[in-house]
Image (cartoon, rainbow, N blue to C red):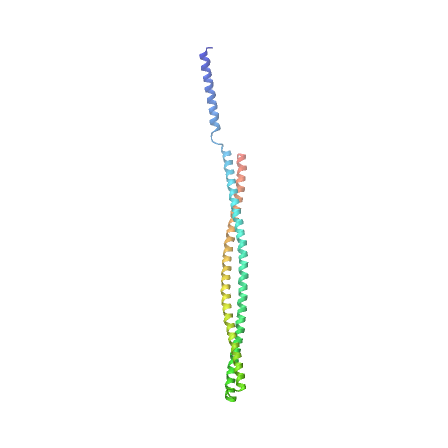
Length: 214
C-alpha cells in the first residue's frame, strides 16, 4: 500500500470519528427530556413556596407581636380611663359637699345679718351683743369664702379630670381599632400560610409524580 493511500484512509477515518463525536455532543446538548424538565420546574416551585411560607410566617409573627402590644396599650389606657372616671366621681362628691357647706354658711351669714340688725336696734351699735354678732358674721363669711374657693377648685379638678378621661377614651378607641386591624392582618397572613403549605405539598406530590414518569 502506497504512502498516499495510507494518508487518505487516515484522513477519512478521522473525519468519520469527528462526525460521530459531534453527533454525540449535539445529542448531549439537546433539549432536556420532558419528565426531567418537569421535575426541575417542580423543584423551583418548591423553593418559591418555601420562601413565601417563610415570609408569611414572619409577617404573621410580626402581626402577633403587634396584637400583643395593642392589648397592653388597651389595658393601660382602660386603667387610666377608669382612674380618671373615679377621680371625676370623687370631684363630683367633693363639689356637692362644698356646695352644701357654702349654702349652709350663706344661711348663717343671712342669720347673722338679721341678728346684728336686731342687736344694733335693741342694744346699740357698740353693745356686747352687737359685737358678738359681728364676730359671728365675720367668721361665717370667712367660712363661706373658703367653701367658695373649694368649689372653684373642685370645678377645676372636675374639668381637668374630664379632659383626661376623654383623652384616655380616645386612646382606648384608637387601641381597639389598631387591635382589630392587626388581628385582620394576622388572620390574612395565617390564610396565606395555609395556602403556601397546600402549594408546597402539591409541588412535592408533583415531583414524585414526575419522577415516576407518569
